[in-house]
Amino acid sequence: MLLAKFKDEVEEILSRYPVKRSALLPLLNLAQREEGFVSEPAMRDIAKVLELTPPQVFETVTFYTMFNLKPIGKFHLQVCKSLMCALVRSDDVVTWISKKLNITPGHTTPDNNFTLSVVECLGSCGTGPMMQVNDDYYEQLTEEKVARVLEDLARDGVCSLKSGPYMYPIPLSQS
Amino acid sequence: MPQYEKILLKNMEQPGYTGSLADYEKSGGYQAFRKVLKDMQPDQVIEEVKKSSLRGRGGAGFPTGVKWGFIPKDHPGPKYLCCNADESEPGTFKDRQLMERDPHQMLEGMAITCFAIGAETAYVYIRGEFRLGAKILNKAVEEANAAGYLGKNVLGTDRTINIYIHAGAGAYICGEETALLESLEGKRGQPRFKPPFPATHGLYQKPTVVNNVETMANIPHIINRGGEWFAGIGSPPKSCGTRIFCLSGHVKRPGNYEVPMGITFREFIYDIGGGMSSDKPIKAFIPGGASAPFLTPEHLDVKMDFESVAMAGSMLGSGGVTVMEEGTSMVWAALRLMEFFYHESCGKCTPCREGSSWLTQILQRIWTKQGRQGDLDLLTELCKNIAGRTICAFGEAEVGPIQSTLHHFRHEYEDLIREADAMRPKSKEIPVFNH
Ligand SMILES: Cc1cc2nc3c(=O)[nH]c(=O)nc-3n(C[C@H](O)[C@H](O)[C@H](O)COP(=O)(O)O)c2cc1C
Ligand code: SF4
Ligand code: FES
Image (cartoon, rainbow over all chains, first blue to last red):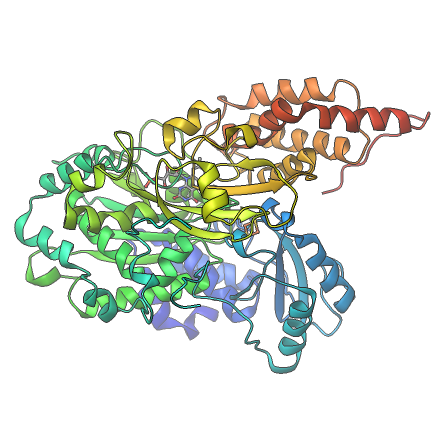
């Protein structure tokens, strides 16, 4: 059982809500964090803990775009394509990544390292074009910057170009 | 660049300010909460906020004090506060900065609000993608708990105030207040019919206040400096205080700027944002996030307050100003936004669910030069049949970009359709919809 492994964390999450079902999204997030996607056993597990039926869990999971129902690559590249980023050429970012990794949106590289997705606004429209890779934001992307992010991630698993805490424009006294 | 007194961004712009509890306390943090607990009654707090004329910063601009006043006082069971940190309106990114840079400011606002409405439990519903924001908020809550500002017996009184951070999982519609509540209850984030309103039947059917992050961040300042002080800033009597406007698009200096409401778009875009990023002139701008109808350069002297923008035919909404230069296709821009709305429609009501798909398909075929005569009438007709006929305000939002670009830039649509006509093959090929 997946959740048995996180007993304390599950207890703590449950304690925040007067109604068990409220813990559904946090538990799904936990499951996805552990496995990289939300598996069927995980959903059954969560249903049992929350005293829900598996369909109740499933119908909720499918509403939210952040839950992957299938395994994806180690790094999930999500490029924002909404208008504000598109104005500053986010479509080029998709092309750069596609070219470099030889995959189109919706696909994973053969080594299972990268999955490329094109997504809607991620709340950093003033620093576009941008992408989210797993938990991190990378903003004001250029072709060189994208290349470095991909190389660093493939080699080291981390990249120092990630941004945040967010502050833009940088105040004159600090720049 | 003109300088205005900052309220919400003041702390975080001090060199070395980290947003930790110690830093926040050093700059006067939690004094307002202490004052409220020591010297004020809940009603007085609500009165003070009413006096300030603060209006919600989430989009609809509802007077905050009035909203709090709707919470039934004699209700026996629990009441809740939910802070709306879903921030997914394209063009808006201010709450992110408020959370990541000065988390205690909004937490103090929430603690005061809990006191005012008699809630013991509050949730911050933060969009799932903001992992860093959630981490920073969780740490801030821990600090505040340890220091006695939150938790059981806050600051030695008999009150309990618990704040929990609840992360969503990627759905724009969960920013709509009743969808937020559904989502927080662990369900699909689909808006509820109103009435009843959250003030009486909110989270778990209990009286609930839903307020935006920026709204919450204003509260400590109103308590510290008084409602009258706040009501004197900006564009009184209806648009008081400062707002953090988010500037994006083809401008030199995009970003978040806190200015008093009532300056003009021209001042904002040119003096503060540095003007256009290239030497092309401005063609159009969106004054308040993706849901707000487009405006044109002739509206540059409109004041940035709720009424003036409404009079110009748009809305101040979430405060996201997006600027587009000459040469940007308005059909393309409307299509990009429509694709967003199509993707994000929750599917609960037919006009929005089906209509968003139709609108997207029609715009796609016009943009790819496969449009037909009659498409513009069809768009107009569809828009009319969506707005005002849906469960939530998403219906109005999704038709705004189309209606306004059709109004101001109809010739661009017509040109594309004319081109399509000229190119049309004789066979009766049916355009394929691929999304
Ligand atoms: C489709 C839709 C999306 C919304 N998204 C947000 C959002 O992301 N953040 C927010 O604060 N309010 C959002 N709102 C507004 C909320 O419904 C609600 O009015 C607001 O949170 C109330 O807080 P306020 O009074 O402090 O503004 C949205 C409304 C609609 C109709
Ligand atoms: S208007 Fe759209 S988003 Fe709102 S409830 Fe209806 S289908 Fe859902
Ligand atoms: S439009 Fe790309 S982050 Fe908002």
